[in-house]
Each structure stands twice: as structure tokens, then as C-alpha cells.
Length: 288
Image (cartoon, rainbow, N blue to C red):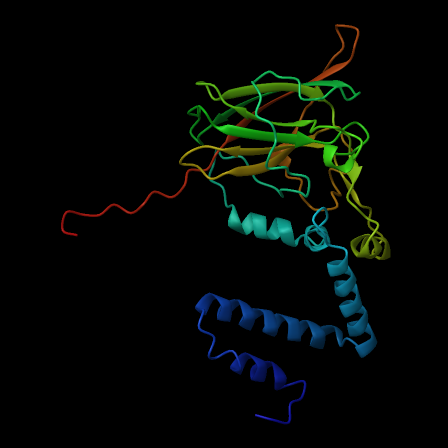
């Protein structure tokens, strides 16, 4: 085929995919081409605008390194990360909803005993957290691993602070026979996502702020269940209705209760985490 124009080029590109051996790849690329071409036709994008878009994506890639992933930030701020998460994690009743992992997870967090203080001596309002991990039906899950991490009261994670000599405000726990775990730390603050690069420029051009509401991250794994990645958000935090990465869900907003009886303000959080069972392998009949 030759003599392409705005009306026939889409079908020509899709026809060129006919020999794609991977059926799923062919499906994805066919849809991508069709939607991308429809977008260009819809807004009648100019060459200058398309070149600006290519420059933006180029600078986004150049911003990526082993400590920062600007493309994930772009995905997050356009709501794509949460859309993929929602499609990939359709949860049954009784299972805790998921949200994005975020850029500050550390796989090598130290495993400590339940009840430990993980603040590392960081200054802030004391926080006590307790949780129970269970099946959707409420059966406790013993020996589940619970990774937790959060920002300090200035909105910074430990990995953003090169002066810190060790990991703080993060740890790994194991649940007891009743599915329970607990720890002590400090209250996290709301904070801005990195906005000194192309994604920050985009947010500014769109009149959007870069802030996320205060939250604590949890990643919980147990044999026979899907690993849960979620946050619990402070019900009193700003930006719950305008999270820069669209990660807030009503079921993940909780009260970080105040207790001033000791003369020193303290906060506490208690939450039940339900895990989604993995699909059971198909049973083979005797005839098989």
C-alpha cells in the first residue's frame, strides 16, 4: 500500500502488525496505534506541538537514574499507574484495597520484632501503629511479612536524606498467631513528589500542585494470598481530595487518634488488613 493520508494510514500501520507472533503484543500494539492516531486526529496536533511532546519525553528519560524514575512519576501523575492498579487488583469483599507502590520502597528493610520503635530517633509526634492481617472472611494470618515505610514530619523519606547513617522509619515485621503486628514511630507529613523535572513542569503548566497527603505504606505478603501494596492515609491531612498521583481511596483513610493524657501529644492508628486469596489450581477429575 502507498499514497498514505490521514484517513488510511491507521489501517496501514495496523496491517503491518499482521505477522506479529505474540498474540497479546499484537492486541496491545493494535489498540495503541488506533488510539494514538485517533488522538492526533482529534486534536489536530501541529508539528511544533509534536516536537515539543518528543522533547518532553526525551527529557523525561534523561531524568531517570538508579535513584529516580521520571517515567513512573509521569505515569503516576496522569493517573495511569492507579488505573493499571485498579484493573489488576479487583478485590473481593473483605480484602483491603490497593494503591501505588511509590518510589521509596527498599527491599532490604531490616526485620525487627513486633512492637519495635522504627523512628531511628527522628524528631516528631510519637505514633503507635497496630494491625491485624487476615483473610477476607476474617481468619487471622500468622507469619505474614509486613513491610512498612513512611516520611518524617518534614515530608522526607530516609533515602532522600544522605546524612542518615541507616534506614529509619521503615522495617519488616511478622505477624503472630493471631495475625497481629505493631510498631512505634513518628507521624508522617504530607509532601511534594519530585517536581524539579519535566513532570513538575507539566504540573505547573496544568495549574496542578505536586503534593501527596500524609500516609504510611504497607506491603503485606502471606502464603496462598496476593501480596497487598497499599497506604493508610491520615484523615486530617491536606490534599486527600487532590492527591497528585490519584492514590487515595475512601477505605484507606483512617483516624490517627490523638491521646494527650500523658502531657505529650501522641497519635495511634489501628487497622485491619484483608488479603485476597490466590486462585486455586484447577482440580483434576478421576477421568483425567
